[in-house]
Length: 409
Image (cartoon, rainbow, N blue to C red; front, side, top):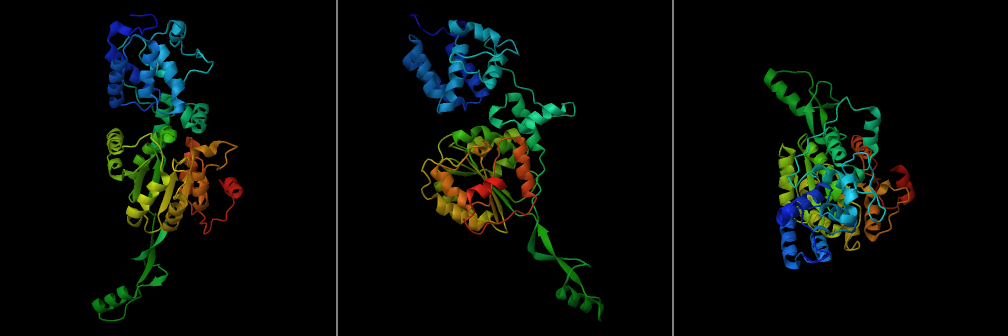
């Protein structure tokens, strides 16, 4: 093998080691599936192992499709494929409290450290991670940190704990009056039909029958962005949606990226892992681009009349970054706003103090929402659940200024 060639670890079993490398990347948060592994094997066979740079860029072309994934891939490649210059850093991963810098001075990803530490001894398959439960033994300070920690910066164990906490969130929608009435001896309205029937049965005068208007929680419709910039947050939202859909009726969930996918039926599966597997099989545009206007147009045309009746509440979860630069988005958002009783926009970018809706997509969405809220940690998600339990204000015009909405949110 020439100078600069790739030293294949563990006896030169290249295909197996590419698979282990892919598992490490997946554990670190990159969207790597079996199809990517097969593509990586074909790419390596095409470029060969004579040149390390060719090997690096072949794997990079397969596993990396977004800018924020480059640092994790670079660190994982040099550690996993035994770069001699970084051997000391690889050994340092065995020390749980050691913070190891990368070549460019950036701190190594926590998810990558955990992924590589899990299988550092040999090339054996990484054992299945134990489920982390939140219990009374957890200290108050640790629980507080978890509540305010951003989903994007959580380690694997913290993400598992957050998912368990999300499953226990109790969603209580504010009830709304329906058109139907129910018999009630203390009701404020007289039920003439029931009164006449009672008189016919009794053969004479009887006391007036009364009724009251039935109240019921409105339907909840969730439209969730699954583009690459939202992938880390979407995983948490799916666990939340699974818990809500299996807890109450009239909840509908849709995912959108470059196309719209109805995932309500797959999420009705009781087992969360099986439900998420069905969702993954149904969604074809995961971690891709975003065509918000096109997807909303399909929703308004095919689904709005079916699911937006009886004062439905809509949760629109997206960062507002649109590949089509907001083309047609304002008209579709206006139609969506008029079709529901309350439209709440949840945007993880709102967590930044200096955030301003500067992109064309955000400017097209903002005038047509009733509330604009951040959703980046457990605390903000609990605030959304609490807001749904109240009767929110209804904006009938787009004249509400951004500073006022920012202050209210």
